[in-house]
Image 1 (cartoon, rainbow, N blue to C red):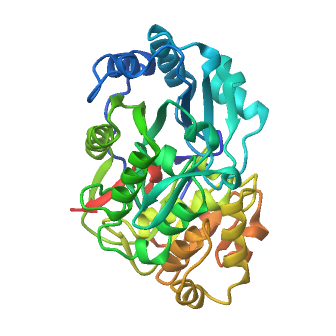
Image 2 (cartoon, rainbow, N blue to C red; image 1 turned 120 degrees about the vertical axis):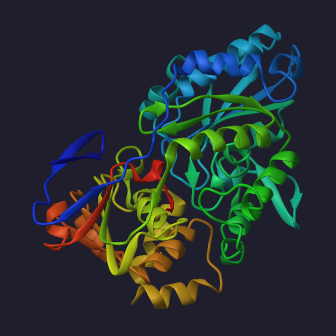
Length: 408
């Protein structure tokens, strides 16, 4: 019997007629988040937050949204304590929820994410963003509270990312608190086709470089980030964003990489909360498998995703565009060719999913939204066992978003 995540809980799976290999990364050692964050802030890469802040400063702290399991309540608490020590009044701090083009967070979600600091928070509105500069002739715009701030700080989760290599650093601000022009440019077909834009790579990655330059234009002065693995948070790093990402990407890569030296008929990829709240986010697991460093599937092989999907395809602007593109398409191949000419921000996940579907089928199981799955060129099945053909050789990746499959 196998145990796989589903929403906030788990399911048990039995594949008695299949040859099953379970793929689990080394994982690393979990840390106490508060202690690690305090240590990172006290020994940052570059100037300390206390030296950057002055009494009377208006400070914007951009945090991650509900799509990431960042311990923002603890990270924000540590940052606010450091700002207070520098003489910054609490009422001079605005906490911006870095939504990008995702849906606004509810009051209950904000309280759950930020605890006692929820009163400082505001949802990012990309339509209200203010221009602060350009990168590669592309406008960089951010939410007004960030544009007007004397000091810009961010939290972040340094985890594998399909385009940025690893998330975190300036991405929390440039994309999370940004606007459509930069999102369109960084997530467009021309950028995503560049050779260095790939899962798990930050060096020589044009997407990562563009986001970092946008962070410079915005004036991101200091960030506090953590990496995540199956055991939990694996560390913390603070200070200059590029150095923070490089530091934690190395930690994450060592903890999450697994060598694969053969191919399989099916990969069962675990997702779990918060990423399996909707199909937009859950499909990351499939594209990480198919379009990562090492595709472990044979020709004709499939990815099987147990995903709860209480939000269906998703409720934000990007999620709606993802659904509209996939549900209107006649085939994955036709959609991929059509989207190579361009698409609106947010629809990039449909582009990447279409690319993956050109080579492999995706089956979604155990979901609350089977009709949405079928409308989006994928297959819905009630259970994992229903989605795996008897006699298959199966690779099970219990935590697919925190596992990097690499050549053996």
